[in-house]
Image 1: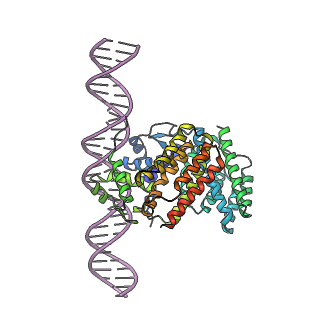
Image 2: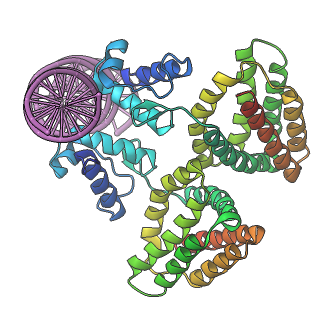
Image 3: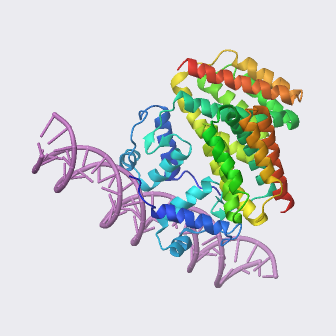
Length: 201
Length: 201
DNA sequence: AATGAAATTATTGTACACAAATTTATATTT
DNA sequence: AAATATAAATTTGTGTACAATAATTTCATT
């Protein structure tokens, strides 16, 4: 049986979300007692949470990070490598069930709220990443999500044009087992995403 | 001024090294009190240390990990992608000083104790990784080192044949700014390393 | 006013106590 | 004997106190 949310877990989530919502400013010093008071818990779970947030790079030296464009570029360079590899595996091995899941994500992204669309598009990528069947790769990408989200959050609240079409093209390449093409499409897709984020910065 | 080793840091190092030296068996449950007693500190720094070890994958669910061949393959697949990218950047941008450092690593690996040789060879890779100038990439590879080392430790105490020559070929490609070739050489180098580890498993 | 030393305050690190949860052992029933 | 319930133990989660360190302020001296 899995234990329900511990104080450490909720502390982590609340602090993370507060950073996303810019309740804490970029570069702001986060002290354990202050956070503990705000959350109504002791320092211990707050410490746990802060360590986890430092892991994913949302906090650095007890301060909310302020990612630069270079940080985002670095993240995307790694992401392009890893997701490029993943989509190649997807094109080679993915079965019809997962392909249908991808199709559903694309459909879901054609309607609904901004949040729902963002969620569907994220799921599209997640399915491909999981298709790599490589836990090291999966974990690595997972860890980068927070920084990407933090950067995005302040930059783009609306969807980038042509994003859906690019997902469709990637899916088509997967379906046709065109590894090379799938990788190229994924990389250029991510590159466009990066450029869009940077230009609207 | 940088603070000297805290109890958490020394706990981390001691537990990590104990795992490397197989003082704790693969899969063994590590309990906080037991470790705290052995190290003569309280549970608090031990908890810190264990969390950090879980991050790098040396501990999972409070147990010493027992990496499978698939784990090692996954790690190397990611490593090949990242170091392949890094060596490309190295071939494009690396200046004469860093090139000399690489040369020194190769020379150092031709003599000395096994430990010294291993250290020199690791430094060769580290220099190239740092040449990527991408902190996300650098951190990601850094995190993977422990698992690689743990696996290696039990497999190869002696150096693999032709390793030096491969490093020399990579260096030559870097020196000549042959990006494509440098990447290909690095990937096949790592592939051979992986195969050697697996076959002597 | 600028500098630097001393004192004050704030913050983090560590130990420890107790509670909650998990695991293991024991007893009971079928 | 197997299955289930109950009790004991171990282990982890959390709060709190105090110590060590780092940051800030105050104040004296030039």
